[in-house]
Length: 122
Image (tube, rainbow, N blue to C red; front, side):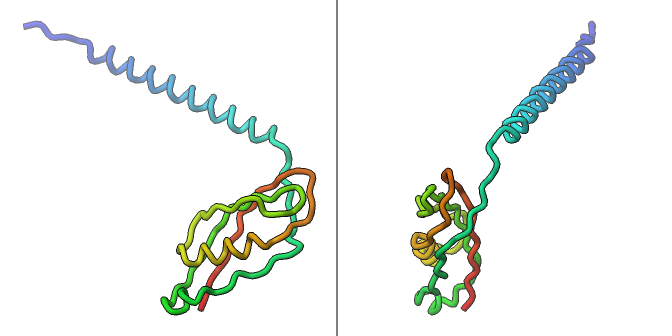
C-alpha cells in the first residue's frame, strides 16, 4: 500500500497563502493610513445658537432616560444640513434631532461633520 506524502506540501501551500494574505492586508492598511494623512485638516466649529432639546412628554411618562448620539453635517454658512442617529431611544432621538435642526454654527470655508451626544435624564 502506497502512502501519499503530500501533507508537507499542503502545509507549505497554506503557509504561503497565509503570508500572501497578511502581506496584502498590510499593504491595504498602509494605503488607508496614507489616505487618512492626505485628507484636509478637520475644522472644529462652535455652535453660535444651540437650543437644548426638550424632554418629550412621552419619555417622561415612560420614565425614559439615556444617551442619544447624532452625526451632523453643517453647511459652510452654519446651517445644519443633515442629521443621522447613531444611537439612542427613538423617542429621545426625535427630540434631539428637532433641537439640532434649529442650531446655527459659525461660518467656515467648507462643510463639516460633527458627532453630538445628548444625555436625557428625567
